[in-house]
Length: 294
Image 1 (tube, one colour):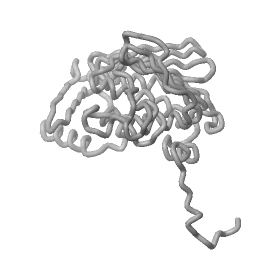
Image 2 (cartoon, helix red, strand yellow):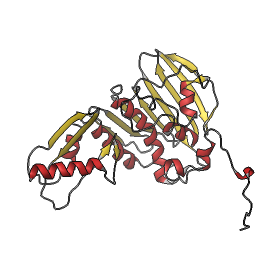
Image 3 (tube, one colour):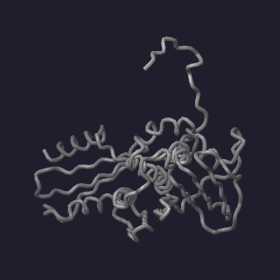
Image 4 (cartoon, helix red, strand yellow):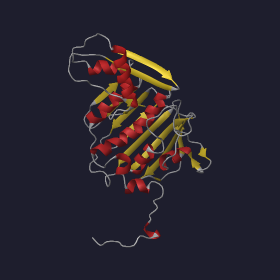
C-alpha cells in the first residue's frame, strides 16, 4: 500500500446529510450483519416506545412482510407535519432526513426517552432502499417517501382519519446489509421485554413469511417481568416485592423475588434501555438492599 506522506486540506472530506451514515453505517448501528439489521427495527420501535412512556401511545404493531420489508405502526400523537421555520421544510422531513433533529432535545416534548427522533429514524431511513411514512394527525393522513435517505416525494395528504399515530414501512438496503432475513424470535424477545418495561403497552408482532404472531401486554410491568423470569423456579415467597418512587423528577421502579437457585439473575434498565454493564443505579440498589437486610 502506497504511503501518503502529505496531509493537506483537500484530504479532509465533508459528508453532507445522511451520506455519512451510508459511508460508515457501523458507527450508528454497530455492524451491518444480523445484529445491525435488527437494530433498524429497534430504532423505529423505540420512538413509538417514547410516545408510550410519555403517555400518548398504548399499542404498537410490527409486521414482517414477505418482501423482507418491515412495518411499524403506533397510535401515538403522530410526528409533526407543519413547516419547520429554520429548515424551511415539513417537520416530518426534518425528522426523517436530518441527524440530531427531533422532539427529544427541548426538554418539553418528552420527559424521558430511549430512542432519538432524527438520529435513530433518520439512520434507518439512510440505510433503507426505501422508506415510506404515514402520519395520522389533524384528522388527516399524510404521506412521504424516501429512497436511501433522500426525499423522493412531497409531503401530501392522502385521506382523512379520526385516528392518530405514525406508520413507517422500510426495506433495508441490500447493498449495505449482509442479509435481509429478520429473525422473528429475536425481535419477539425484545418486544416482550419492552412490553414488560412499559406497563399497559400492547405490542403485537406478526410474521407474514411464516404465520407466526405474538401479542404482548403486561399490566403488572416489571413485577410481571419478575414473575416471568421465575416461572419455572421454586420461589421462596409467593409474590415479588415491588418498590417505586420519584425524587428530583427521576422515577424509579424495582421488583425482585428470591428463588432456590444459587445464581442471581439481575437486569437493570434506564429509559427502557438494557444497561448490561450496570451502573450507579445497580450499585445503589445492591447497597440499599444489603443495608435493609443487615
